[in-house]
Length: 65
Image 1 (cartoon, rainbow, N blue to C red):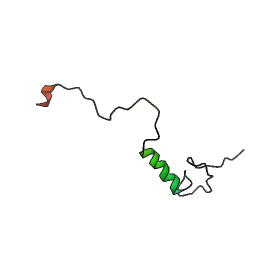
Image 2: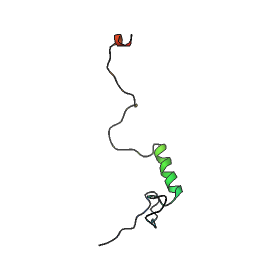
Image 3: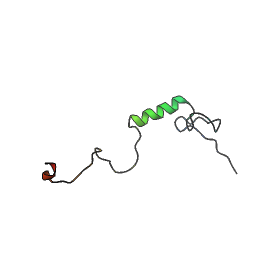
Image 4: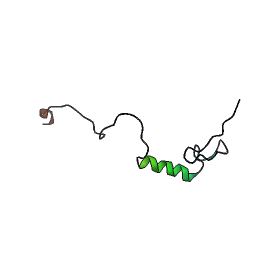
């Protein structure tokens, strides 16, 4: 059976130990670069657009009084 070496998903450097503190990343830098990409909306999850995030509700104007 062949063993595969784990690699950093950002820079593809090999990960040395299973207990590496930044796993699955090779370094704190790669971990923070990945976080920055998520926060900067560079990554997208496949699917239909989510809209503006608001909740649509049907109600009568009389209910507001």
